[in-house]
Length: 304
Image 1 (tube, rainbow, N blue to C red):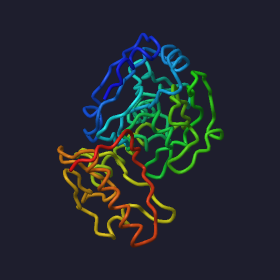
Image 2 (image 1 turned 120 degrees about the vertical axis):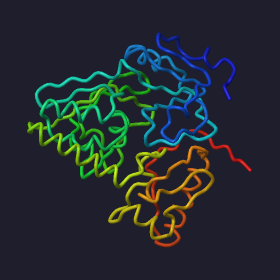
Image 3 (image 1 turned 180 degrees about the vertical axis):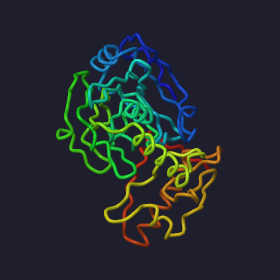
């Protein structure tokens, strides 16, 4: 898959450049082809220099924890960037939590709890990085990231840095104006003073509810579709008889029909085709077009 010499066509870096990097092992679905070239920047300056000098014709994709991503079997062409430990810092100042873009949402909720900062408990129910969560305005249990976002530090395609408040991001349900190629470097979240015991109790309640209503012990990619206005995606999928339906090694969860799970042998094609079948049935029966919440990346390989 790797274009000969691609590694020689990108800027020199201090971090790691890995041709034909395996992505399936770190994907939540455990599927997908390789990254043509994986870049793990040493720090913010390394990433800035790279983006500033990178040929704009070379595709550039940002990956986080891949908890709501499907990497297709053909892999991802061009450069795939994944932030590492130097983007994992966490601090707080009064009611603000300040974190790097690679920090997992669960860790943020626990830090906030320890500091007596309320309003971030719902993050314990989102198994992704804060960078990805800000980009898609992720949410759970009655709250969205837009409810707590104070400021975001973004790196644009040309390496320039912007610090933006939520009003500049056009944040809507599972959507923002942040481009796919922009990298979330740092996030500031604002909560409120609250009793630690109450915060930890709410986190426990969320985790208990999640374990009962979502297939968290299976290989999955989170919610498959966004909820259409006025209804729930899982109810529509259930009503058209898709609960438990399977294609290859992929199956629509019996616990929560808006989740697709893999038995460990599924291909990305199995998963995507199963989602497309559910999408078609809902459209045919209700005239409602389900929109993907899972971000599908890369190129398909059709198998006989």
